[in-house]
Amino acid sequence: MNAISTVASQATPSRNTQDWQAADSRHFLHPFTDFQGLARKGARIITRAENIYLWDSEGHKILDAMSGLWCVNVGYGQQSLIDAAAAQMKELPFYNAFFQTATTPAIELAEVLAEISPPQFQHVFFTSSGSEGNDTIVRMVRRYWDVLGQPERQVIIGRKNGYHGSTMAGASLGGMSGMHAQGGLPIPNITHIDQPHWFEHGAGLRGETAGLTPEAFGLKAAGWLEAKILELGADKVAAFIGEPVQGAGGVIVPPASYWPEIQRICDKYGILLVSDEVICGFGRTGQWFGCETMGTKPDLMTFAKGVSSGYIPLGGVMVGDRVARVLIEQGGEFNHGFTYSGHPTACAVALANIRLLRELDVVRHVREDVGPYLAQRFAELNDHPLVGETQSCGMMASVQLVKDKTTATPFDEALEVGMVCRGHCFGNGLIMRAVGDRMIVAPPLVMTRAQVDEMMGLIRRCLDLTLEDLR
Ligand code: PLP
Image 1: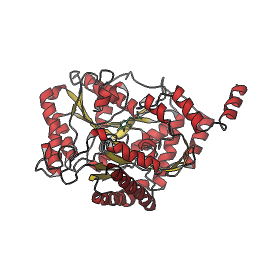
Image 2: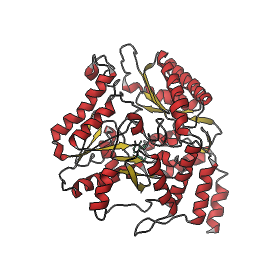
Image 3: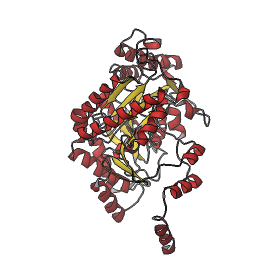
Image 4: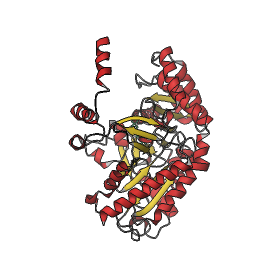
């Protein structure tokens, strides 16, 4: 044992970037990655982080405008989270929650989550990720209708270009065509309606939005849910799932009319409403949960990422009273669970994370200060020749790159303009994500106005460099 750890610790400092890249491409299959493409280029090796910045193995400082992967809400290097993990690992690193046992951090976290969630949520089921959370949603929703004697209510409706994770159920609930093209997805009884994206549907100029205001389009897009319910038969439909703001789809903020109308339709047909809060939860939209920003009262909420600021894997499902009552009072044993459901170390870190979010008043900071400032600075990008649309909500924002902004004409996909822009971001010390030709950010929530200015300077520079490339 000692011999192995000596070898590992001696070998590490002598490795340079090329050594790491070679070992990486020999053994590590990265998520959502073209393996050969990565092997040709070599991975960027991230070695440390502080606040909103990362450093790579070449010593470059990088502004992380994506919070890791939409998760490091409190920023990097927060000592209280680190201490909480160390203390819990020393005391009790792991014990499960099966067989009528519990650990104190899991109980306490359940209590705190019930406190910060909308009032209908008094119960939680823990997982280790958002994908497991959404798998849990599928099982829980179907179990709910079974217990109520309506087992034919099986169908869950999601949205095209929505993202709900990468497990069989998560990828099926999501509407990513590239994912559905691999592995025979979606699984049965999951179907999709179109996304409420004003720009994609014609920006008021053509197609579904021609002549419509964004608000009128929002009602029309919600109407697609009602049409789908009527097509399937309401007695077959179990639930509707959506992200308050579509994150991985490109930070698509629906018109304000959309979600209240979705709520009205779910209520009308008695269909469960599921809010996937994996990105929007824990302050990102300026409220604790995105459903509060959008004005809905969901029956179930999936969470992950920001619950622990990504310092340790943790996720789960907040179960609203309507579902909890049936499962608890009538359901008997629910045959579902994970080894790490309620992992004590993960829960201890989440508790420290939520304590810090509260101490720093981060949700208010997003809602009243840095969020509106980010929105203002993103709106200013509309003067750029490449920019066809900007959107923002709290601490996430997007900018759509177009060939002709007056006619909202997209670029030829083969030009991969988004990837060109992303390349300039990497080259200039900025992590920004490209979804097609849509450039997106979701920075740590603790970002200051001065740091927003720094980020916006880099974004504008990268847009200019992209424009030069196209000339
Ligand atoms: N749901 C949403 C909205 C997400 O954005 C993600 C991940 O990005 C997931 C679910 C899946 O979470 P995980 O990657 O933790 O499984």
